[in-house]
Every structure is written in C-alpha cells, then in structure tokens.
Image (cartoon, rainbow, N blue to C red; front, side):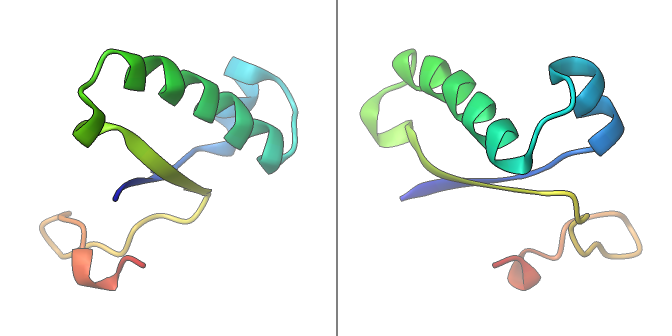
Length: 70
C-alpha cells in the first residue's frame, strides 16, 4: 500500500488555506490527492496519508532517516 507522510509549515498552510483544524487540512489535502490519483495507474494510487508539523529525523547530510519514520 502506498502511503504519504506530509510535513507542513503551519504559517504557510494558514496563508494558503486559512486558519483551520488539522483534520480540515487533511481533508483538503486528501481532495487534492484524489485528483492526482485520477491521473495515475491504480498501483501508484496513494491510499493513506498522515500529516504532521514535526520534521523528519535527518542525518547530518540532511537525508531522512527512513528507518526511523513510522
């Protein structure tokens, strides 16, 4: 299953979508992903998303430590 973890900047998302709850942000993002999924083959569809304000844990070379992402 293809999943996406989205890290957002609270100030930027408020500028773009206005002041809303995290659930409302997730619903808006999911609507955009549905449009993207329409253009992709079924096996590339994003099935699940998780949004967070917390940055990913990164190495000293700024690569995401993928084994630490859950």
